[in-house]
Image (cartoon, rainbow over all chains, first blue to last red; front, top):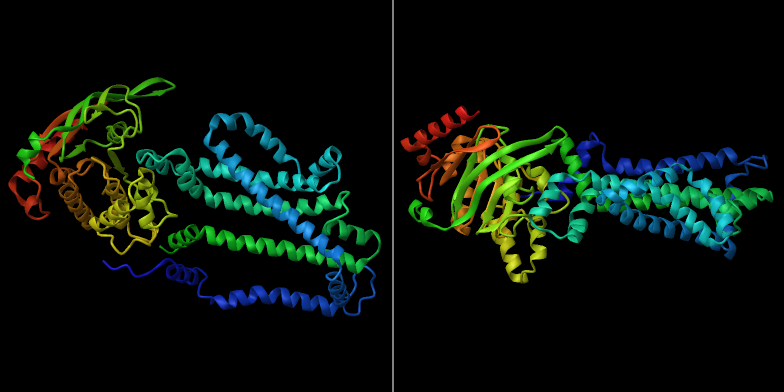
Amino acid sequence: MVFTSSIPARTSVARRAGRSGTPRWVLIGTEVLVPIVLLGLWWVSSANSTNTFFPPLQVILERLLQLVQTPTFLVDVGSSLGNLLLSFVLASVIGVLLGAALGLVPALAWFVEPTIHFFRAIPPVALVPIFVSLIGFGNETRILSITLAALFPVLISTMDGIRGTEPTLAMVSRVYRIGWFDRLVSVTLPAASPRILSGMQVSLITAFVVMIASEMLGSSTGLGAATLLAQQSFAIADMWVGILVLGVIGYATTAVFTLFRRRVLRWYLASQQQEKNA
Amino acid sequence: MTSDTLRDAPVRLSVRGLAKSYDTKRGSVPVIADLTFDVRVGEIACIVGPSGIGKTTLLKCLTGLQSISSGQALIDGRPIDGPPEEMALVFQEYTRSLMPWLTVEKNVRLPLKHLRLPAAEREERIRGALAAVGLAGAESKYPWQLSGGMQQRVAIARAIAYRPEVLVMDEPFASVDAQTRFELEDLCLRIREQFGMTIVVVTHDIDEAVYLSDRVIVLGERPARVTEIIDVDFGGARDQLTTRAVPEFAELRSEVFELIRKAG
């Protein structure tokens, strides 16, 4: 018996086969090139713009260069990014723990699930005014709003993922007398991880939307607040800078999360690919 | 190991009047009526019977995964009321019983974690189990990268490394091709020789039952009863070609076949 191939070899082969022969560098090149071309188009078509609300891209970028040297702008970016990341991590941790508890203890789910689905049905942004009136305009309000909004997708997907675990794996754990904690950490959560990570992806997007909304509603710090203030005080270039930076943050966080997911679910993605090729 | 010494060996697994019924909306549905048989230390016993007779239910009762409605299953004289530590189970569906996120080596390692073995012994068990099933060199592969027969070898290695006194298998070779099935049957015989395990196999393959067994337990009727217990005296060393060619093999095969046909 000879065992030659290893995972990376197999998956890169599989990847190439799966994408019908398109070389990898072409795909990456396209991904990088398209935004650059779009920015170029924007630059050219807006170059002679006299419309107050659509300043030339050149003006926007120059303003960006000025703004990144001002402490207030950096504080705004830092505050937004910090709230987003902190809330996302909080939501993920609480969501996985709570979702696991609800997935494992049917009696608990029976009591709590209707309530969860009720709160989930409220558009997350609509919760912000409630928190503002309850606890004021502080940063805690924003973190609470973002966390709560981002909690539901990961919570529900964890619950479903754990309930959908292959029953044979549960029997294997019982036959080998694996304790409940080991079973949770080494069997149940990994088995549910594809679903959990899909939920986290939705949570991240929700967190991003609510982050901006929470800053636009009565806050004085953060990119959302800065962008809104710029718009209201006719600092149109500043407004565009805010929107541009928000877009970059949204794209970058999603990209980082995608890399994280690819790393964690390498076994899953590779085995799916294998199945497709078989 | 000769058949005579096996017949004198102490009883490892004892089933006494075991009955199992499921509670449904329309009342209690009996699946197993009354089973009594013994499996001695170092024996290979095969449980055969028509499909749907409740063989898998019996295995779940024996391994403590399901409760017994009445009667008893005893391991070394101790009643089984939950998965006993002296037992391991190999499932039919290897694709579902292995952890796809763990490598071959880590799949074998997983049940050993909580046994708190000295590190050296643990590593030796993993290495030995993988070598015994012919998977040395495949440690860092993932189960889904292997063929069906190889995956079932991983499941068997995981069971061996756990060092059970009784290895229970539920139609372990039903989903592999004929050639692989012969290899795995011989692997099963080698494991008994090498580790002195008592092995209980549920199978629907009559040839397999006769080839592997020291004792074939034929189930029949619904709800299930033991129709017949047939002793097979081929000794420990068997060979796919010569053992299957002896006249007694054909006789036993016909006998079991006849019993199952009557039972079905």
